[in-house]
Length: 104
Image 1 (spheres, one colour):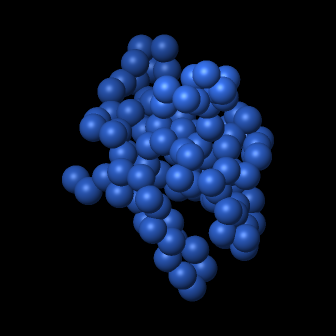
Image 2 (cartoon, one colour):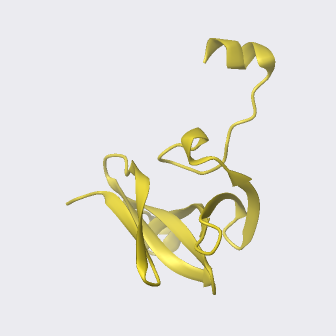
């Protein structure tokens, strides 16, 4: 199964730059009229949710401004982020001290 995500926007297609990690895949859902929620799904099932699929919000994509946003939670959009600073797991950019940034 191909683990890339192509975000379909009205009259155009935007290629999502990350590949899903092994055992995971991406899904997009409409969040608002011009905002797409990008979800990352985990293939395993757990008892706490009665065997339903496990998913977490990766982030949001504004189709009008072509900007990615980190999530505050699955129902609230956070700050705009540069896609180069995100990871395949989340659009949230980790906060680092200057010392930590020097070693990364």
